[in-house]
Amino acid sequence: MAKRVVVIAHCLLNYHAKILNSGVKNEAGKMIIPQLLERGYGIIQSPCPEFTHGGLKRWGQCRSQYNNPFFISHCHRLAGDIINQLEEYRRCGYAVGPVLGINGSPSCGIDFCFDGEWGGKIDNTGQTNNKRVDQLVCVRQPGVFMEVLRQGAIKRKIDLVYIGIDENKPEKSLETILSSIE
Ligand code: SF4
Image 1 (cartoon, helix red, strand yellow):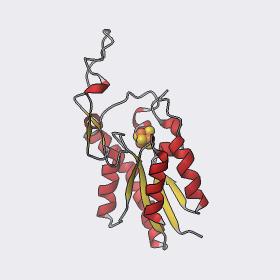
Image 2: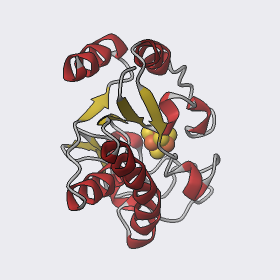
Image 3: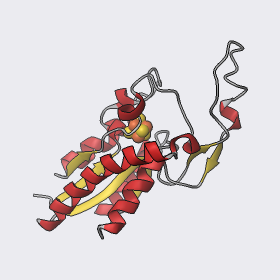
Image 4: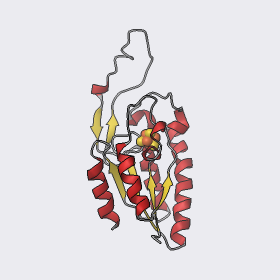
């Protein structure tokens, strides 16, 4: 029996939690999850921090919108439960991790996510307060949830590897995952 549990971003298993009509087909999940199961690893599916905060009809938001005290405390609650689970597995001799996030997500990104001066009133001009997606920039920071999870794990002295899945290059992501645990 492989005594290892891996933590995955919720949508890697349940892509329906992404923003409504996101168009994502979850090729990454279809490729990565069976490989983990095949090797006998356990999978902890983290709750989706955005779905459990704004529901399915939430707007797409950027990092600085989520990086507020209310969303951060929400993330602390969710991450705390994952950390407790990891501690218990570790106490019983399991290897824990890696944590698989989704690069680009303002919540679950690992290596990068997107940020910008977003927020404000929605009006009838169709321009959403003059904000456009191409005004966002890629920032070399983790998403808010992954940042909270990482800080919490460090406090509890749980050493974890974090891997950001590139949903457009699932094969490459799988290679990185397997090379980190085999
Ligand atoms: S917040 Fe995380 S789990 Fe939820 S849809 Fe985005 S990347 Fe997936």
